[in-house]
Image 1 (cartoon, helix red, strand yellow):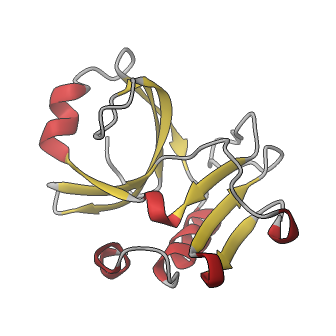
Image 2 (cartoon, one colour; image 1 turned 90 degrees about the vertical axis):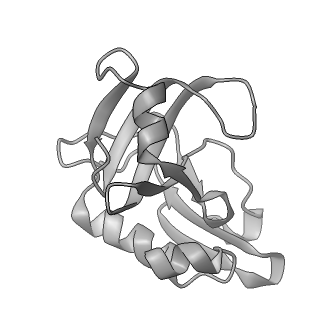
Image 3 (tube, rainbow, N blue to C red; image 1 turned 180 degrees about the horizontal axis):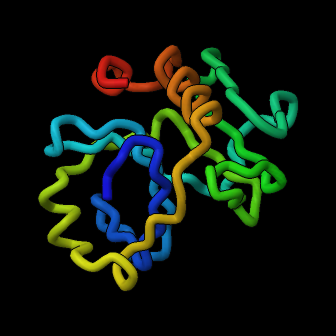
Length: 146
């Protein structure tokens, strides 16, 4: 379930901070010893300044503490040829870690609780990892893991 590069679709996803549950994609960045997962929750929300907008790739704006990896809705991102319906943003400051045991308890059934949406193409995944790994806005503990 939690292989690095997997994009998982949860319906619904239960947020750690108590926000209302909703359907959400989940990108596994690192799985550490089968105990912890480092992941990013992609979003449609564009918080990138107009002057720095790009269609695909890494944006690093240290002057405003912003790091973002942009994926165009036209770009095939999985090995099976899927793409997101909307331009999608993965923000470095939103990376979080999750316990595998808790995730398995919350989402025990593939097909009803979650779906493995696809494996991210290796080149895109490597670019995503590099974007986060060398960012000034990503927490040091996550950069070390990546």
